[in-house]
Image 1 (cartoon, rainbow, N blue to C red):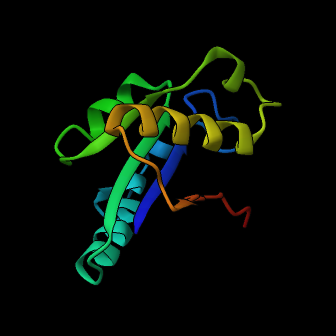
Image 2 (spheres, rainbow, N blue to C red):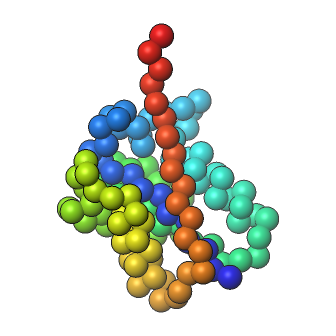
Image 3 (cartoon, one colour):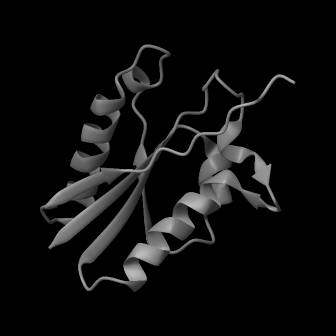
Length: 119
C-alpha cells in the first residue's frame, strides 16, 4: 500500500501571519506535523511519502534538514485567499505522483493549525 501525506503551507496565509514558521516550545510548527508522520512510518511497513505544497522559500528552507520530503510548487491560482484546499491537495498528489512515478492508494492531508487567543 502506498500513502501520501500532504502538508499545505501558503506563504500569504492571513489567519496568523507566518504561522508555518512560528516556533512552539522550541520547534517550528511544521516539525510537529513531520514528527506525527515519522511516528506513523515507524509503525507501518507501507510505502509512505510526504509532500509539502508551498510558495514559501522560508518554509522550504526550514525543512531542508528533513530528508525525503517532496516539494510541490504551489501554483499562483492556488495562492489566493479563495483557493480551494481540495484543489491544492489534488495538485500536490499529481506532482508527487509524477515525481515518484507511482500511484498512491491513500492521500492524507495533515493540517496544522495555530490560532491566537484573545485574553
